[in-house]
Structures are given as C-alpha cells and as structure tokens.
Length: 127
Image (cartoon, rainbow, N blue to C red; front, side):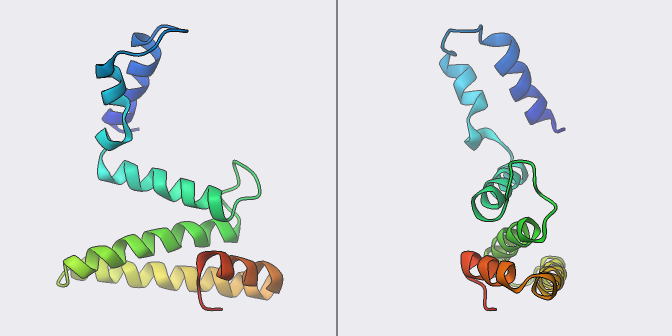
C-alpha cells in the first residue's frame, strides 16, 4: 500500500465523523486527481475490467478480465510511445503485453469460441 493510499484511508476514517460532511481539505485530499499516476491507472484498469468482462465483483482471474486489463494497459503504453518514440523499454514491455494478451485470447478461443467472440467484440479487437 502506498503512502498516498494509506493517507487517504486515514483521512476518510479518522477526520470525517459519521453522518457529517467532510471539510473541503479532506475532500481535496481524497480526490482522485490527487492520486499518483500509477494509482489512477490502476483504478482505471479495475473499472475497465468491471465494465467489460467480470461476471462478479471479485472475478479478476478469468481470461476475459485479464484480456480487458491488458488491453487498457496496452492502449496506455501505446499513447505513451506516441509521445516518447525512443522509449525502448516501454516498447519492449508493450510487446510482452501484446504477446500475453494474444496467448490469453488463443486459450479463450480454444476453450469457448462464444466467449472469445464476445470479448473481442466488447473490446474492439480483431478476432
């Protein structure tokens, strides 16, 4: 758990009494815009998985959920590489993520063609 996450939890539990509204400083500290970029990306990945693939709230291990998360990370790194063309490490990481997603899609296609087609259609992937 990062310092910011721990700080946000501390503020939300100890400063704001039950049943009353939080002060503007507490609301500012708890705002998503105050989170580090990595944590905002993590929240976005979880939201994308929830919107696209999960059958239940806690299901993150199914192939559809993994493909949805990888797709969001791939699009994020692709936009990064558009701005930073010489970032070789990011390009290598992007290739690894694409290969991992391709493997998961191959597995999903092998076990259940209907689920494969559904996730490809939902995420806008060629399939």
